[in-house]
Length: 154
Length: 479
Image 1 (spheres, chains in turn green, cyan):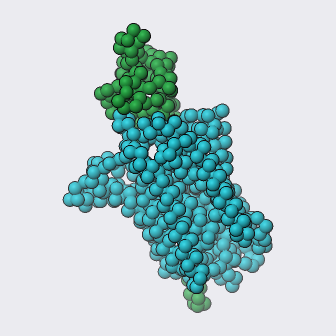
Image 2 (cartoon, one colour):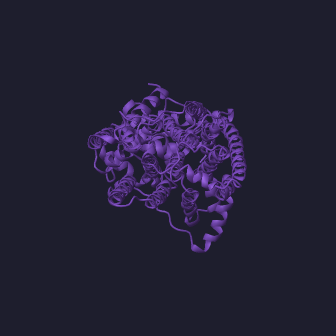
């Protein structure tokens, strides 16, 4: 490098370093605020309600079936119903193989009122000992209020 | 066992799965400590593919594959004693430089811990419940039930065919700790994500360390000081870009940060064997995390191979180097392909998305550009810094052994092209689709843009000290 260019290189180098570091520090400060926002009262309250809702659905399902009970979603379940069941219980339930009759049909009903999870209750349609079809609802957990829980960011 | 305890144990176990192969590939570096759990996550992804395609418990497969990796590592060291990480003399360290880099490392760890503050809120993302943690449970079922989980149409989730890494690492930790909770998936994924961020910081510190000239003046330490500030700042910036998804269990930060790391180590940093191994590991992890990660990883792999082909040795070593490059690339592609192959041969559900009419692509591209821009302002800064640097500082950059900026920009644009291409050619209404995904799909280009700025920042600091007659310690030929 020629000695004539060296001062230019030094000056531009210092300028690039200063601008780069300045922008980084400013952006890091903004990022820190973004991280802090995840702990805001509203985000925390929404997260707790979401957690309580799905824990409630999970608990009600476990009051009706065990992880070994072969079940299927009730015929005609809506997309929203399937999504809630997927999110709450599908990771541990045993699905009945296609072409076989499950021990019960799992569903979700919006009933509102006490004993429900933000208004929803888990249902199981199955045969009782006498061979009659019955519809049972889950119990043992509830979350007061009306659903659905606040939508988390997609 | 509590969730934090299970997560900590899970991270150690993931590290145990990947430790020996990482040391064999990368050497004994601080970076190896950071990357071992990432390599462990890759092992669990392969284990998930084996469990789905062949049967057998995922946890057992993970340990078998880890044992295989460890055996290959030991065999490699037996065959090539010169590659053993132990018993190697190290050149005397410049104490002042070491202190600055150590302080930078400490600040990077502090920044990483600060980045995890969001975990104090018990957030579990929508897709985490609906897909990522859901599949973790399926991966622990017996084979017949696992096949049903992935095949029956009534569950209405075609996305269950997405790459497995995030679900698989959580399934492994669930299986090992006995704690089956979506919250544990969130914490483990966040910890591995933040390790990837720390990896970026370590790479930046390595550039600063390399750029310090020999001698005694304090000014010569300027590049290391710049790196010691930039590394923790980059960790926070990366966390800011990826939140809230960093701490809600999503796979997007995983692929984005791994792919950005592959750009840093494979296309920006000096082309050493260790750096290339790090890049290969990270891009493989990116490709095993999400569909767009896989396509981006394949583009990055092509770029890294192209960069390597640009400076092959002559003579007999040329052929051997070509063989190593081909084998490494094939291994990476095979790892990424394992899950899609398992999904295909078992007839599992897959996403099928029809294309939008080609006549709408112009309008959709315009909407994509308009939707992306607020998340990608950094690209204007990166472009300006790159232009200035290319005009005035490129000689200094070459002397530091750093890659040409064009490589990193090609990688960034490839990743941006992949996600843009999906949005432009997909059939869903484009505006709501962008609104619902822009903060996730722009994570990779945004983080990579900042990395380009950081590398020029450290290069600028090195140039600012070039009044000294001393040369950078790490001087080497251009790459």
